[in-house]
Length: 224
Image (cartoon, rainbow, N blue to C red; front, side, top):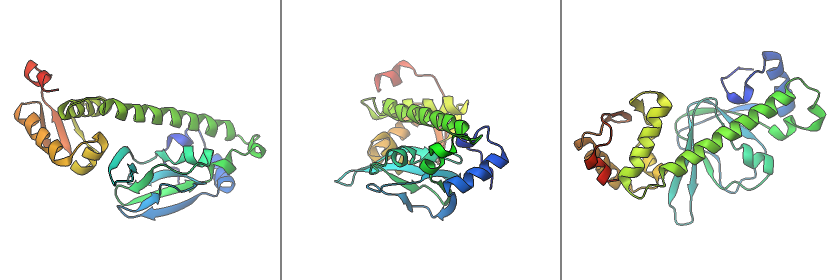
């Protein structure tokens, strides 16, 4: 089995991974950009692990309004809550680019008959850590969308990416429409505000590369 870098497999050796492959019916599938991997209403019995590319977790309401809840990159896990609870999915998992997904039946894996396996306690602990991390990600989005103004949301979001990357220059994982969907904003309004922030000397950007230039001054604070 290909040993990918995923927090779900932390501290597991090759023999344990190979044993898990038998117990959890692991399989690989490839998806093109825009393909729906899991759809709202599905009853999932598998979790997905991104091996290549990236996946967006999206919600579309009955009126067609789309929100992007998170972007998952290589090694990250999705669908685990719904697979474990056996509840209909309330979100879509969509290929943000061409991607390869490893699927595994996690419920079969954590069946009590496997409790004596050396990987059993490790995989449970890793899944707990994955769930905690995802709660932090979702909390971060709530924080980003809590500001009342477009500039306020952008400043929070871009600042959080800067902290995460440890640099004032970083890549945004979304195109402009996806960024608007993530921040619950109109795309044209978002683009217009980015232009104003650049004119005010707060940021520089080219496509998906952004650079934070200055600390907030009094002028920018008034616009938040």
